[in-house]
Structure formats: structure tokens, C-alpha cells
Image (cartoon, rainbow, N blue to C red; front, side):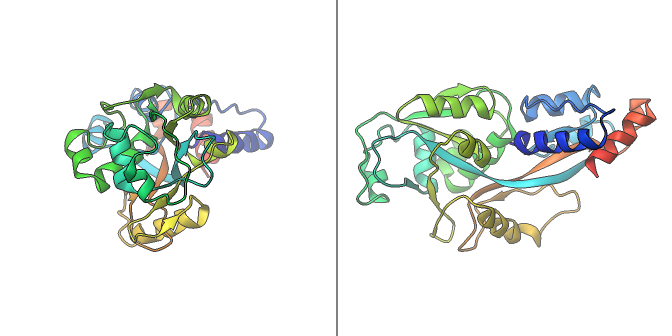
Length: 275
């Protein structure tokens, strides 16, 4: 989720501090959190905050620093479609549950009047590894679909009822790009970089919204009054006419005390980079 902007940040920092090498790898939140609690890295990036159990297992206080907020978008591959696809939460959940299997399903047609929906099987593309983006997306599905909540639930890794897994957001984007009839969830920057179309979503207020900075800001404002001291809060399906419904913070997760590094210069460089 955060890899595109992390690449810019590390490059900018390296130009100012050519003696410091920052190696950020987009391996998924699950791997990042595992490596952090193993203390083999200085910080992890994750769109899923640590659970209470994970915080206990960490063995020392851990900070969640919200570094960016962004939208998770529904990208699709329907070359014959004559207008932008519109989806609501129930449709997305039923597609990912495998109960809606064709693009010309009457339920999809009902919210896309005048659209040339093809008689084509739907291929669901999802992450194959533990992923904070999956955590945001499945949290949204659990919010809008009681069936998803009871059958699948929210987690960084779930038992997908249908579809094909791709490694990393790049892998999901590649499946969508290369498969007519595919649909999947990716962070907005990946859809833009891959020139993938993105669906308009019906939000909690019943308003059609496109993914945008303004939509994420509106969604964030809807939850900021309830922001806890540790910043662990979802931004999914909030109220507000302009709020984009599948948004999330992505966190830089780090031990409060970096003494375990046994290297003052490395600890200072880590703090300088975060600052």
C-alpha cells in the first residue's frame, strides 16, 4: 500500500544523507510485522494495526504512526464496457463471496443503467499473502455484509471463497490487467500506474463517489473525533456525502525504545528518517 510513496521518501532522504541506505521491501504487512517483532528490522509498514495480542507478544511498547491515508479501489478489466462501473457494498461482497458470477447479472445491471455489461465470468483477484490492504478491504466487506462477516470475517489473511491470489498489490494488479472479466482490490496508486479503470462506489449515505484525495479526507474527518491515543482506528464505510467508503491509514510501526539495535547511529538515522 505504502510502497510507491515510501520509494519517493527513501530516495529523498538518501539524497540528503548519501551515507545512509534505507532498504524498504514491499513484502506485505504480515511479513513486516513478523520481522519487526523478531527485531531484524528497524520499522514495519502496515495498513493493519497490531492486535492487542500482537502488542502483548511484542514484548515492549510499540508505536503506530499514521504516515498516509489512502483509498482501496475496485479495479476491473471490462474492455467492452461503455461507461464507468458502479458498485455498492452488497454487490462487492456477493462478487467476492462467489454468489454473483457473471458481469451481466441483473443485480449489477440494476445499479448500472445503460451499461453494456458482457456475458462474461467474473474472476476475483485477491492477495495471496498476509496483507494490510486485505485487512482494510475485508473490514469493509464485514461492515456492509452480514454474510461476509459470519462466513469470512476481517483479517490480514482470510480463506477466500473464490478467486485467484496474487503476490503483493503488483500481483493483484497484474491479474486484473491480464484477465478480461477480472476484478480486484488495490491501492489507488497501483491502479493509476497500471492504467486500470476503477469503479465508482456507493457510500454509506447512498452517494456515488470516485476514489480521490478529497474522498479520503472526508472519510478521515468522519472518524477523527474518535481517534484513540494509539491511532489504531479504521476508516471504513463512514458517514458523509463525500466520504469514500474503503479508506485506511497505513502505519509506520516501530518499537518506542530502539536500544535493542545496539547501534546509536542506526537508531538516530531511523528517527531522522521518520521525522
